[in-house]
Amino acid sequence: MKYQNILIKDISAHIRLITLNRPAQLNALNKKTIEELHEALKKADDDRAIRVVILMGSGEKAFAAGADIKEFMNFTPEEGRKLSEDGHKLLFDFIENMKTPVIAAINGYALGGGLELALASHIRIASTNAKLGLPEVSLGVIPGYGGTQRLAHLIGKGRAMEMILTARPVDAQKAFTYGLVSEVVPFEKLLDKAVEYAGYILKNSPQAIGLAIEAVNAAFTNTGLKKENELFGKAFSTSDFKEGTRAFIERRKPGYSVD
Ligand code: DAK
Image (cartoon, rainbow, N blue to C red; front, side, top):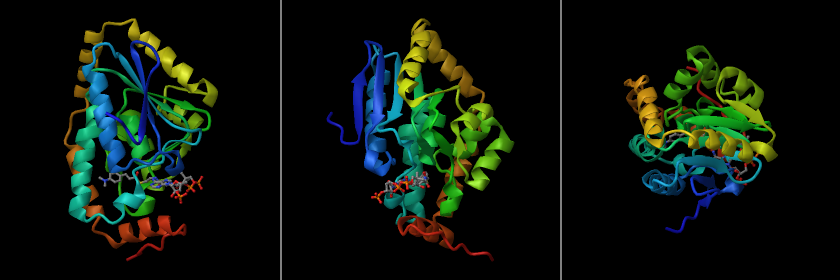
């Protein structure tokens, strides 16, 4: 299959690099990109020769600056709920449950859906210029691709609340301190570092790795993702959501209701 929004490159016989490739839009995740990622990830997971996948964004500026605001701003609550459900199924839950480990190499902004993509991955490393955040409430919506659950699982409820409620991104160093990423390296070394981690994985049993992913994930089974899905749809029906996304497009500060 020929892809429009992603690039595929085998770094070695066992390591596949998948690059999000919409740099002019800071690799924002639109529907097409999500579908292509699903296709490419499924192919990698079904291929016994591929034993590690590395995910990156093209360019130096962004891993992914979020879901594509321009695309989803006009969705109805039902379309919002549906896209959230499909997104979970095709990409976020899909990655989390792959038997092939996925390493997110975060090269710049990982915001909103972009950070949620990294959170669904099994290992995260970042470049020194990375900025990670869940700014959804600044747009009048909530994280809808698992962020409310996976961030809290990963870094604890208090820090997750801080990041989600303030909508403020953290820099790479703070992300490391929070346990959000395993390591921080200069941008030029990021891919090499991801390959180094892949090298450690390749020394181990592929079957045991698949089982270990399943076992670790089992510790975090809960109904929170369903609740997030429902509340995400609810946010789409608010006037704040319409105002927040319009303000982003018009490059101005949103004027939210206070009653
Ligand atoms: N969506 C669409 N376009 C985006 C984008 C995004 N998330 N982020 C950046 N862009 C576009 C900009 O509009 C601009 O396009 P042009 O105007 O040139 O056509 C281009 O990328 C370059 O961006 P800037 O000119 O803004 O670059 P700056 O260096 O000035 O600023 C920035 C970089 C990352 C600080 C800024 O671009 C920014 O604040 N971006 C938005 C970040 C953000 O709020 N991300 C969270 C999005 S909300 C869903 C489920 C989950 C979600 C959504 C839906 N459904 C189930 C429907 C999750 C929501 C999110 O991710």
